[in-house]
Length: 472
Image (cartoon, rainbow, N blue to C red; front, top):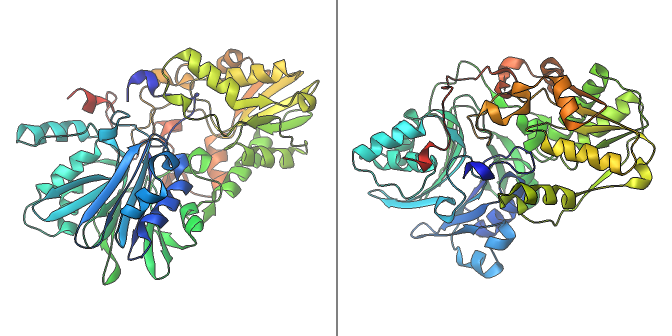
């Protein structure tokens, strides 16, 4: 993805969502519905690969799940095992060759792989592979793993995957499809999510539990950090692929923003977590106001929690147009400005003359926050007090979120008062790191909080460049 198209209305983007199912007569159809439930995780491309145990077929294209697939296309994906993917690029451009699942044939047969996350050493590993003869077709870090698997020698697929992932570092969840297996793997720190479910005796892998609900499946558990799960004719078995990291480091932004409110991670519901963040935020930074409103959709839960704790009425002060389309792919600032205006509308009858508390989940560059504050003032708000249900986002993420450098992040070079002035709010306050961990009920050393604290769970270089594969 080009640097001028990384940002989407000043919001962070996850890389993708995975959904795979083993041994179901409607494998491709269920995968299609599973991807629908995961659409929020990636909106640039979608794909499904399926196998009947003999031949592997796939279909992928640019666009939303509803744009890429129709009933006839899904019907042609015959097989009892399927693997699907929705993508938002953080490494590799937004183009069809980078859409997943990646499919290939090598000396042991057909293989499809889907990836969520980011490999921090993909550049040097790819350079080494190319120097010894590998030819790459994409600019994604995922293909690095495909080449490493193909070069693993005359070993079984499980051993080949383990050897390949021993060569890479980063935050990742991988799902692999062979002619007779579905395999899921999670990085040693458990940064990126991967869950296991079951329906009609068939096992499912998914990035979020909300996709299980969408297809009528039951959530069983999460793939553990550093674990490989192999699903085949013998059922589900587990293999300790790599030693666990010296601590777990689940991405805190899954709770703050990325995941759907009806998903659950580590026994905690996302909506409940966000609501508690709002409650703690209200205790940390009270304000005299008339109404509380949230930026739809991810901030609504926190706004309700804030309102309940503060004893201030919650109102739907902003309405989102859900059918605006994917205008984020347009690179011009004018288009971004227009898309925010069309996506959000302020309810003037509720806001006029009111002191408004505006709840949002994060501030990245601040440009959208400024436009929303102005939108509320134009609707007649007397005061606009901004409260953010996460700490200041001031450090780049190298593990699967589309931030690149400190310079892109307003909190990296401006204090809270400076950001308040920039977004033109009457006041601005953030949830503290302690407040976040208190709301979640987890010890800080079990979460990745690096975007707030710069305490990365594994070594990263200051000059780590997620766009390096574009230039190799």
